[in-house]
Image (cartoon, rainbow, N blue to C red; front, side, top):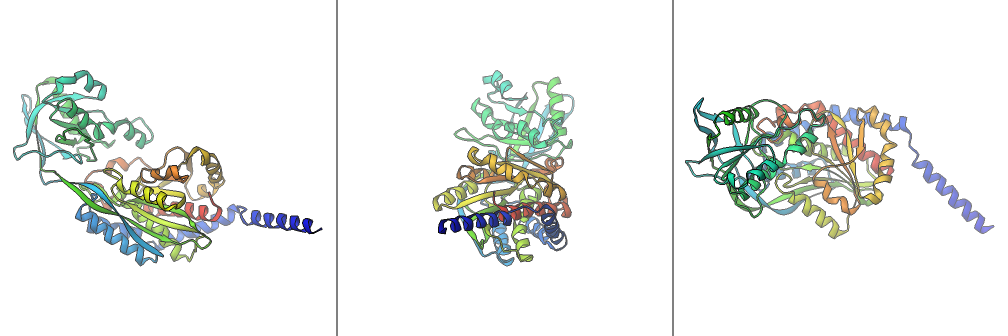
Length: 464
């Protein structure tokens, strides 16, 4: 009889727990719409972004501008009432852009001397005051470069492969073209080239050049610039008529050695399962020719807003909600690597990580990634929330991909979510002088914060 009562008690407790976790879609939709109303009417995230853009500005890891961003975001996380705020130091390579960024066609028989719209690529080598002049050779890809081989020695290699406008997803177009920027100058240097010009990574047809990192390993760094699309086409058309065309490049950028940068972290401690961490984050660094508004100031303030929303609405999460603003995503991901290493060393349990690093445009959905042993079950759980998200205008939740910084946590059995807004305008601004506060729409920014907060709320309540 005693055993029967124990069995009955266990069954009753199990049924009670199951009932507590039963999903009531209508109830959750009503509650999450209250969260959205609060964000759209009370959030200071757009004001935070204004301060970050206008007072810190473009903020390469290790720069004074980056240090100002660390101080500001740490202060704001403390001000909004995070239970704990701290920073995590990491050594990063520091490169400083100089005031001189010029390129000029110097011997065209058709047009004479022609100035080109260019910016130095990150970690490019500088030149002396007179610049560097050489003949230009055009290639579309690395296969064409290898075919030329030693013929590029002493020349400037011009990479002119456009992002494919027919691809519906602009991130896919970017991924198919960007290796000519990240690895192109290095590959050219290996064959003896003395400089590189790279068609900018954008689908907007204008003459605004875009920067971004170019990676030299053991190879000799060479001067390398991004060129606006109209000037890229002009240079290409002239080369067909004048294959001996020469360009002079003048750059005053310099490698500055190592600097200490900091990842900024703030959290609300969980009331029931404090050892289970739900991370929200973005990267605090940015390129320096704009203000880093979309990339990734938007992700920074959206992540901070998740914590602030929970505090404003008096939501005490069961699990710990942690905001992480990563250092140095743009040129090495040293901040994310260090964070993941220390998390593993301390035995921290990140059950989920959500990163916003795709701009501040209108929300579309999330991409999910996880180790194979937990991916199927996690995705099935989130699929149960699809109609809830659809009611909020967030309809596209799919497996495959997440975001760069949080990917370092994948081997720790963390379910990863990359926040996805509409991408069509993102590469109009990305890594260019146009990535400024004025080009971020307040409502779209706040809706993105709402989508992230909704996902955090559901994971905290139901698990993942």
